[in-house]
Image (cartoon, rainbow, N blue to C red):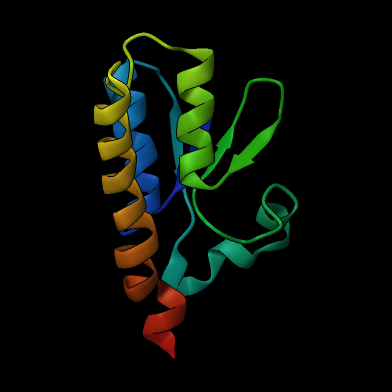
Length: 115
């Protein structure tokens, strides 16, 4: 398993944190966002959105979008769980995650900063 990310990417941080919490070993490689390395043809062939992070599975499958990657990790390796068992507490955790993904991340996103 390999995680392609960037140190300033909050989305990549989410996945790195989850991998560490679950004790899942992964190789790490990076694409420098300020140099547009995520738009290189070899990267776009893995993640056509040209966004970070991308999780490469052992069979070559590439997964994008941090929350989708987190769900994959939770579904394929449920222990230890990332989410509480209680449905109300799970909803609260998802709410925190979505606040970061939908409210904070877009404003600090490179596209917005460049504009």
